[in-house]
Image (tube, rainbow, N blue to C red; front, side, top):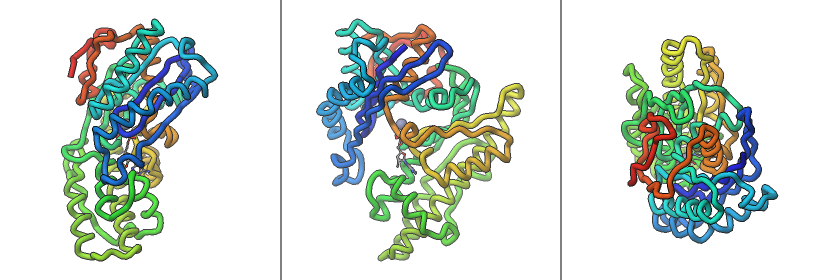
Length: 356
Ligand code: KG4
Ligand code: ZN
């Protein structure tokens, strides 16, 4: 089957066509992403209204490109999938409404996809891994451990009690006067910095829980920067390197704890950690996670960077996985600003519409 996927929940306008065979193997036929960096650059963050307007301006062309890159006409796809939440509601509405219109005009089923489910299932597209597995989702809006038992079957084991990890990267970048998106900028400056110069706090790490907290770290970074101002290039690099080393340690320690729980609760399953979301593109965090997984005797899967950050292929694939199980959604399905992954605990064919 072939599925068109549309993603408009934040500042990427994206569309892709993905194929899934009966054995569950996936193939990306096209994957078109337009980031809105220029629209938001002057404001130091994503402006929801501008994001929604940019999606309106570009989505039609992006979808047409996804079809032509795949060498297909839209009538050749078997279903239309779109992010229905969580995200910036104006943008979600643009993508979901477009998907509904296409589904109606082409007479194809609609799949209203949870964006987090897109991140959660990407590793099955890229690495064809079996359920169950442990997912660490680290994006601009979420930082959580989720046990992925099956399509639509998720159990959250831990989350952030304040900022998301991507948000902590973005705020650190903004504080240091670096550009957008913050994560890659901090990573780039960290390359030449001294990770041992600043001892930043690691909140919650001594507690026996799988949760995160990054707001105290953010304050410590701000205080260090204020004390040194004006900052030299070396100061900026050292702060970036120390911040990144701190969060890498936090994430790796928690990953070891989560893998220990996975082993204890699922003794018959292959221990496997999948990292998803934009921050999974960070090489330093990937390296410490690789060590953590190895010491826990677990396999580590990190999809390629362009599939870690928001894209249409992950939405198309989540749609294909659900369609393969017989799930489709009604055209009345409402866009949702908030939509936790583990509320999808009920069978995917009965998920229905909890309109926002
Ligand atoms: O998954 P994503 O593309 O969008 C959301 O659903 O949030 O994640 C975007 C987040 C941003 O906060 C961005 O700064 C962060 O991922 N990010 C990174 C890197 N690339 C993207 N953070 C650290 N290092 C990176 N290389
Ligand atoms: Zn995302």
